[in-house]
Image 1 (cartoon, helix red, strand yellow):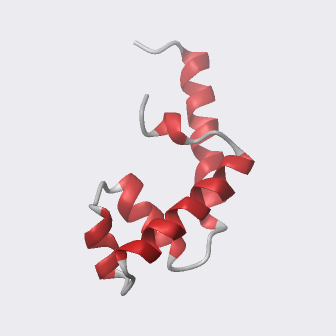
Image 2 (tube, rainbow, N blue to C red):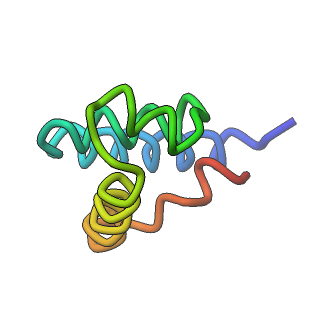
Length: 79
């Protein structure tokens, strides 16, 4: 299994990510959660939020850029 120190570091990284996500406005926060966390297809997430797929893609790009300033978060979704 995972060593305790690595588990604590992963938990802390996850906490920082969700604090940053919590700082996003709507519909950005919901788009991020639906696409990255829930694994919904971009087209479906966009439609559910009343956005075009192009607008949703642009928003995700800006969200990723915003989150990357606070921390490298992608590893949380691809361990």
